[in-house]
Image 1 (cartoon, rainbow, N blue to C red):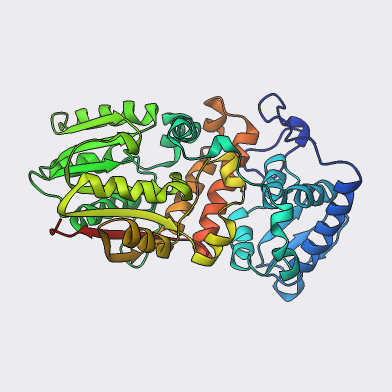
Image 2 (cartoon, helix red, strand yellow):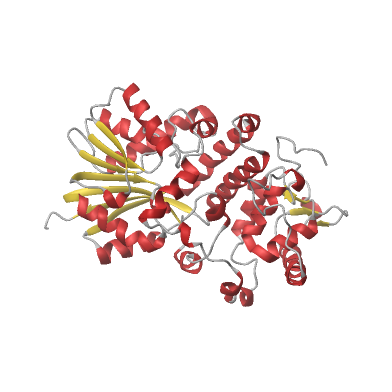
Length: 429
């Protein structure tokens, strides 16, 4: 097979650069790998037969076709033995890696992954689920969210290239869930307005206005700081991404708010000062569950009595959070080292037990994130050639295609959610 096409329908594992993707091209070998691979193959075929999928094998075998064969999402297994061996040896990490090297593909990976995500807790037999600790890897020490690791973890994702993110983000350069007007909009040119709507809702929730001393934890590319400054707030924003800091400062200056906004390269644990309001958008996911208590204590100490916090946080069900908090995942390995999603209950419990902050209001908007991700994914795919021209290879492009589809599936299936959470601090301190 020749080099893969930009639309992602074909790939050849021999095209993977082993100097960049060390060990990825190697299929697990040996007796143990063969036994686990055969078991994974049986489990996968049995599960696929119960799902609304059309799974196609190179020998002509089709699972899950029937009368709905023209509407079911297509999952095309190109190298069955390698596919099964990777899953048997590395579980869901192997499943994602199999897509990266082209062991399986799909014309619509988001649709395939949505079906799988909707049944994720039922695909593995209960007996094997109870033995998960014997098979799943744990996160490496280098991924821990301690202060000496955090900047490298953040840089590995956010410092990839501002030009890369600009290929699929809208003009606001906002990399978090938008908030659409019902019914959900689908046109690309409406995404920027939906992002501004999301930001304004958070600023309203935190009562940000003229003279507000606002702390933003996690700058992004500066849109929230710009909109807060336009309201008359004085903004201190912190980030651990040098690329984001550089472009955010440029955007703030171009908007005419240079005097009202400072953007520092700083870990949240090193912030000093006193603030009337604190806003943080999809940053808690990078903190790590061992440091959630520290994170909220820092916020509590920085906020004045009577102040408000507005968070936007990706969340997962509490029972799944507890079951997976020591599991090393494909997303942690390839996209967000050290990341882990909280549950809404975990945020409520930690703030109630360890701080003077109390959850005042929550607003769920998971379906909005599914649409946001769909727009990003489609735009990323449409700019596939430009991704390669920026110096990223085909394996990287397929990895990001999988990441965006995987994320969309999580929200579309309801396995993941995203909340805007408002916390207040009592005036009696």
